Image (tube, rainbow, N blue to C red; front, side, top):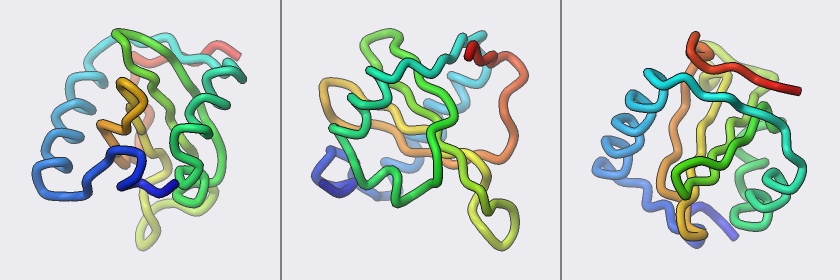
Length: 110
């Protein structure tokens, strides 16, 4: 299953919506973890995510959203930013956003 089949429509509107969602989330204090069941659920919803990045950095479930942050080994100019955020709601990907710096208000429990 690719990004389009998982519900993500790569368009200017989708990019604006993804950027707005990330801007809202980065201002919140979020507690991320590494629940293997949530990682498996994300992998089932969109296996193509792991073609897009190298590893799972953190996952969480909140506000009816499955949120996953992926990490890239190679990152920074000219490569893509280090992290990618994907947000699933109702089994469909709603957000896909790249970012370089981990927000200060986010913490990870391992």
